Amino acid sequence: MGKFLQLQKYILKNDFQFSRLAAANHRDDRKHAALTLAGYCAAIVMALGYIVYIAFDLYMNNQSTLFFPILSSILFWGLGIWTILSGIQKLVFSSDTDLIFSMPLPSWQAKLFNAGKLLILYFLIVAMTIVAGVMLHLFILPSLGFVLLSAMILIITLPAVVIAATFLISLAVKTVLNLLKVHSNIIEALLTIALFLSPLLYFAANASSLNYKEIFYSSSPLNLFGFINAQPQPEFPQVLSFLAISILIVLVACYLFIKQYDFLIAAYSTSRKTKARDSRAVSSNNLFKSLFSKELQLYLSSITYVSNTILTPALLLIGSLAYLLELSPLLTNYTLELSFISLSSKYIFILFTTVCILLTTTTSSSLSFEGRSIWIVLTSPLSLIELAKAKIALNILLFLPGLACAITVYVRSFSSSATESLLFISFTVSSLLLISIVGFFINLKFPNYNWSSEMEVIKQGKSTILTAMISMVLISAISALTIFAFDLTFPLLLLINICVIAWLIYKLKDSSLVLE
Image (cartoon, rainbow, N blue to C red; front, side, top):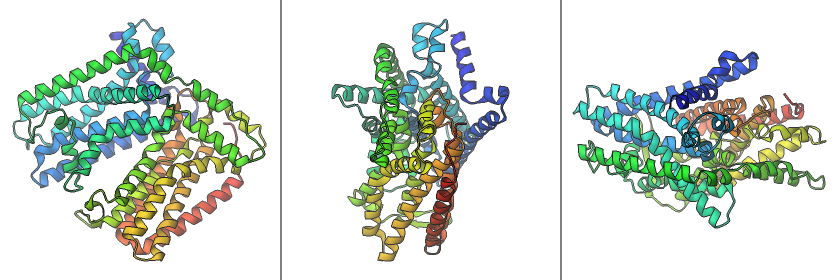
């Protein structure tokens, strides 16, 4: 076990760029490592800030006993989504798999190594979060000793339960699709995410209000596993029951993982990805059609690429359909009361649509994802604009169904005039085009074609991080302006979108694709 932990420490230092920051000779490598670490630190600070907000909100409403059920629920669903978006195949193999199996480790440790690496990371996240929660409630909650015991059990079990639950759902989806001979990464990603989130969506649909406290308390894993039985604070037998059920789920997942390891290796093989990259030639008869077809095939070849970019288009479509079908009267007749402002359902829907459109884009890693085969594009007579059109069109295609539904909802339920409807349509379409072009432009300036793991470009690439930062700035600015001065700022935001798009297109015409 000592060698197992030593190797974990070495690989985690590499994954989190600590080794690269200390040992890199190239200035750009150190900058990239520092940027990645800064992104992680910013995420931690934001998460701790949200925890403080929840604790303060519950304390002000005399609901502090709900804190740990709500916190455990947020951790469970958040880490579960992260696991799915990162790609379940990361539990099976990674760029270090050959190194791991060459080490003097028992076979079961080598097979579980990647899952163990994720377990250590989640353990640190959960421990830090729950310890912060305990410190905030040290002198507030009753039965402090029992609270500490519950916190320890959560820290130990929650990371393992998250990984086990997502793995079991993914394995079930993969097995059923293989039996049906369905090989589609989009279908697999959507089914996995939908099945995992189904309890959360069920409780949200049946909640009496859209208040986060009711939804997350009802959908808490503690509640789902019988840890809480209609009481804010569980009793000792319920704690033992939760612990026993959690251990059972983890043991079943470990047994199936080891037993089905060869099947998992074959199922998540990257052979289809290699074939997709190299097999299709670009026809000059219909250039855009050929480029777009190649781009779509490349995109569909990677479950990691699909999982990390399909969630927000799917969320926009599902959310808009919920409004369109009027699944809950709260959707169109709800007012969110904040301490400084009240938001009607109209503005909530505008913000929801804006966040979904701007949060992710395929273009921020579309050039880098070409990998070493980029030389084919470099030696072809293709112009950069022709290549950009195909890659931008893919991102627009993903959002097109959800955007069409969102526009229908707004025109039917929230718009008061034809001018307002036209303004909303123009703004949403221009925002989608803007973030698509921004992602491509940044990836053009900061490409990475020499990668060994898809996650290096999809989630850890410099262009992806920079695009995500720009997305957050845009979302924050648009949200603030929309909330406080909607009628005045919406036309201004549309004008800014159009001007930035025109400027970026002009810059792209003067740019060229270079191998760096």
